[in-house]
Image (cartoon, rainbow, N blue to C red):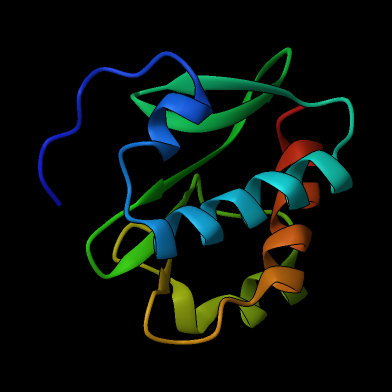
Amino acid sequence: MSRRPKVTSIDDYLATVSPNVRDIMEEIRKIVKRTVPAAEETISYQMPAFKLGRTFIYFAAFRKHVGIFPPVKGDKILANALLPYRGEKGNLKFPLNRPMPYELIGRVAVTLAQEYE
């Protein structure tokens, strides 16, 4: 993807991505809001993020995948389910050419919120 302009809101960020990826990012945004209702939207490291006092989840659009950061650590069952999506540093990479595992992403959001409280 080309270099994005500096953004100050998730809406600003979403305006910079292609419509098909924007739909995926919007769905992830909705999932985080639904599964962690107390979370506040923010931009951190120029990526959409949510915080509960401090930032617990980041998500970003890349050319071939959507990334979710940071890695899940505490839930071994969830970590095993995420193995196919693990990047080299443990961050998650969900390929754009495959169905997006939204239910799994919801579990990630809840787990990260609990880990970073």
